[in-house]
Length: 286
Image (cartoon, rainbow, N blue to C red; front, side, top):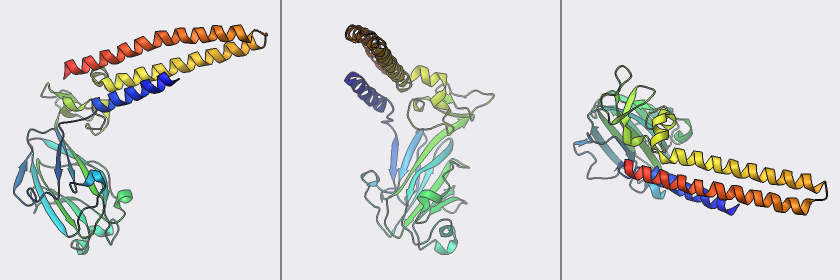
């Protein structure tokens, strides 16, 4: 029993390690070096996240009465999703989107092009974490602006951005890209990560991901391990019950225990070999 808990723990650590994007780029909208200072070029970055403030991960609140605009330029199409948003404004959503509340509430504006461009979405309000529109947003151009102003304090937001191309005749133009079911072509390095970078989760179920991503196959091995253990335990209980009714419970217990140990001896080496093989495969691929 304890071996399986230990194996699950090792698998969890392995999956967590494999599914981490260590090269992901992060921007913080309380960085005064970047705020209101020209254009930020992110032309060679396939995905990044933007946070309301640098202490977002520590669950500290952002400061009131601040204002930051970031204009970002890429060389591809962009789709974004609002992973989290929590403010503490005086008005609720969607009333806070009205122009008369523009200078009174915490408000994030996503703008097409430069700051004077058309507003694609306004995110604001005191209860927006439950009510505002969470659907992914397709940006119209490769230049966009985020305008963030605060009047109070709360836990802020996290935005995810992914660059992509559209496939032609079902094929990506670049061999280093992965073809999603929604025709988007994303960087192939993203398909083994635990997040949805296609926008439709298609990279998680693709044959290519299953072949290349250790985390997916490790999960399958883990399920097989648990299933085998449950089956062997069930066989043991059945054998004990049967022989118990015929006054042979002592011998049957030893027999079923021996069978259980034999099954364990078969399962354990193959499981460990599978984990080692998947880890080596991941190292060689990367």
